[in-house]
Length: 389
Image 1: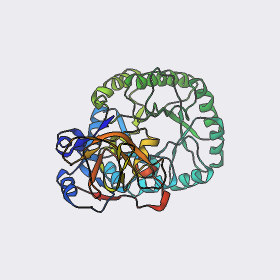
Image 2: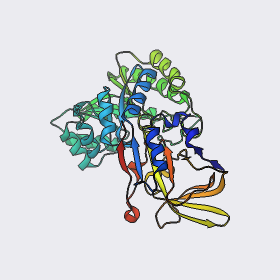
Image 3: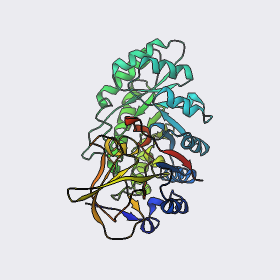
Image 4: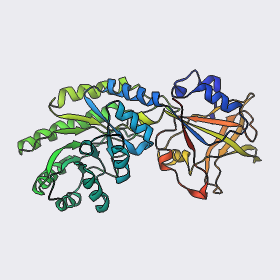
């Protein structure tokens, strides 16, 4: 059973750090505001970037555009000195609009459509990722330019991230050397190694084990005359939604020690944060558009749902905090989305005070893997962004 937070409670927690609370208070008082809305804070983007850079001083930040591709998000990252992890032609275009040099981007998708690959190379991207021989073969079509190739590997871990990104991608460590030889034979450059433990990972030991594996691979590759110039340690740094997570400093302390002990200082180390940068700067504001009593529960129908911003509950396995501003005791409730599909239900068994049609509900930490995974089902209105600072 899930409980909501009152607005006064929420303002005393970190979940509203990236939100203009006076604006939210006005929205609560405004009868049927023009919702759904996404409130985006520039200062919170910068705060998150600085916190991660301080926690991982050895690494360069390459923001994962896939987590939230709003141009303000990218512009703020670039203004802080950050770079970008891109996976498509559209993401490359968004990154280039910040003024970043295309040759410094890292294209991290291990599987590339030829059309997308051609567009990336034509845009000036030079650093790419592979994890299998069939992908290396694609590089032979680019004979006029020497591209730089990172090989993505996976490791076995005792604990898993919330979203296991080693399930779909990554070769075994034993496959790295043959792939590196194949890259060099194709006329391109073996440039380095990368791994991605998974999204919302709270276990430092997974990163540490992957870094130790990198050290072993670097030594093996060096014995074959193959120099490792870059190590990409991925992203996955966690955000506190409902359940507690380690602080970024505590999570990264063992990672820093492993990098210092295992990785030559001449090797450039990068990371690919998405959620850690983009989650907290965005707050979703919704309105109750319908209400019904069904089977002993009060059903509230919002103007946003699983097919839009709350898609992160499906694809990212997130539970977002709920903030309301109505007095009274909690009543057994359900919160559903606006579509005609019965699957479109976000919370069942929620205890919240009674609400009326037109009342506002607020959902902080909805910046990562929400709007970007939404659909146009039922052709309903998507939330508008409002830049609040």
